[in-house]
Image (cartoon, rainbow, N blue to C red; front, side, top):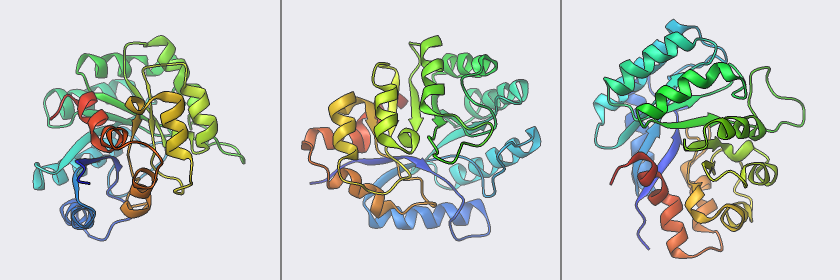
Length: 255
């Protein structure tokens, strides 16, 4: 069966190459082996958990270089921080309103439950930029600014019309799926955990296939192991087509 596979969750880190262009080429070489059509990329070659505005801009510049090198294969999300709202709004305009990016990436600088993030959410929604929030439930405690799916639920309550992607489905996917189930504007990202049997099946059963999106978290994870979560799932072919790309194309308003 041929699928149009669009990967929601890809990084330039953990990939061979000295420049963004070299790393993007390596990612696409691996993607071609897996018959993947497009990759969504965000964050630069070297991360910090609480980046200063200059670092945010540098990392977004690196992604912009990768996008310029492969405009037909790569899709960009702008990396922002609720610790620097005004500078993040400026990056939204630079990279989305006036640039080629189509989404927003939020990581661990500030828990997203805080209302200080609201101007970023509002502006992204105005630009129809898809919002991706890293989330995790950690048994040994999260980073100080690291969000859980419960934090993202608070954002979903404040912005019920805005699509929000729950990154990693919270790591502990059984808890993550339960946390976001009641909020139809929340979507599950399958990326970044082991290809455990039952993950994708539970997400489809509890959320509906229309709210589940394939992602890999490459280069921190391999495309092959993450694709296996969908290829090997006991779900219908129609549901696999939605998860592998149909849902993401709908949210991005792309064909």
